[in-house]
Amino acid sequence: MKMNQVYEIVNSIAQEALGESAVVAEDLNNIVDIGKAFENMDGRYDNFVRRLPDHIGRVINVDRPYSAPILRKMYRDGWEFGAMLQKTRMKLPQAEENETWSLYDGESVDPFVVTTPDISTKFYSDRTTYTIPMTKTERQIKSAFSNAVQMNSFLSMIDTNIRNSAEVRNAELARRVLNAGISETLYSAYPSGNYSANAGNVRAVNLLYAYNQASGSNLTVAQAMFDADFIRFASYQMKNYINRMRDYSALFNGGAYENHTPADRLDIYMLTEFRNAAGVYLYDGLNQFNTDNVRFPDDVETVSYWQGSGTDYAFGSTSAIHVTNPFGHTVNASGILAVFADHDSMAITNENRRVDSIWNPRGEYWNEFHKFDAGFMLDVNENFVVFFIA
Image (cartoon, rainbow, N blue to C red; front, side, top):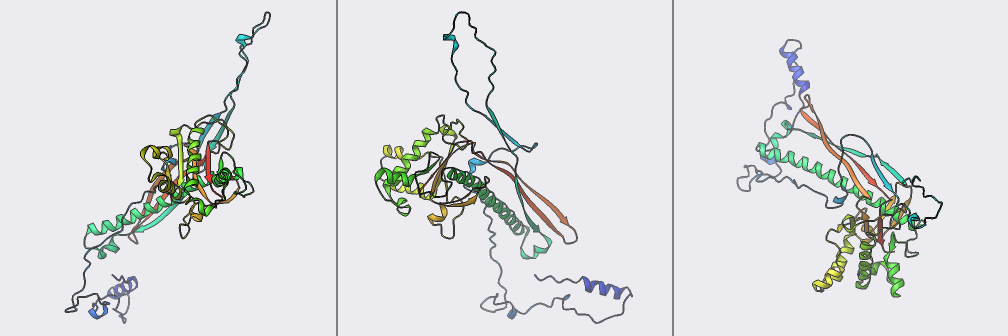
């Protein structure tokens, strides 16, 4: 429907009617609708009499809610007041001599010696925020619909797509927390960025280097994802860490703190290509007993990519990160297969979604502002292990 602005014309004709202006020549083209011939309707009419206009038989509004299928374990609670999250930890105290068994005549045992705990505290207060603006109308779009149900369905589609847009953006922000942890872990083992130089350490594990050293092979990155022996070796190494990380150790975190991550507090993130390769090359054809030996826990979360899919979903794109992390370290790495992280190493807190709106009575429309705030935190003092091939 064409809308003509006639405010200048109605001002002029009002002056004519009130005797405030002489009668002048007027162009009525924008006032009176004389209709359009069917010949000007671009063929949108029947194929018999060619005078009956085509009608819209069905209206489909693409209204499909999206819930990002990744990193849901990272979402935590929020709080209404206060700005910071305080996280306090304590180092394990040292053992000392038990003086019960070393008493001597004339000597005393001092029970009043002060032993203070070794405490450290971190504060998290940064938040991220953005807004998605959208203008909505009713009066101006009524002519496009047959009834209120159709129009409300259209408006609902707009709301759904705004939420979907936010869901996509929030999921990608969550990936950046994961990527920050990956990059800092890799940097700690390979500050030079030469990831194929050696097997890394217990936190940044180059599975391909370790496999070639152990087997005497010269397997390449391109071959590894299709080699059943390598995938079996990689799965074996990863499963070892489920038990290793549940023991107290200072090896698996960036702060050398004595931590332990029970199996129910271990979050495993695995690249889709590797998870599927394990399923195809290891699980298929095995009996139930053997399958249970090689299968990963059911709550492993697969990710289609760490940072982006690229334009082709090639392994070189999905397995890669190219970031400068919050510690100021630039990391360009690929071949990342999996991350084993303590549940408290990453979190999304204080997620706050809200909508503010204002009605414009002059233009008869609403302006809505869909706003999103959240805190994205990473604690490198918690256990965090990266498995990769290079």
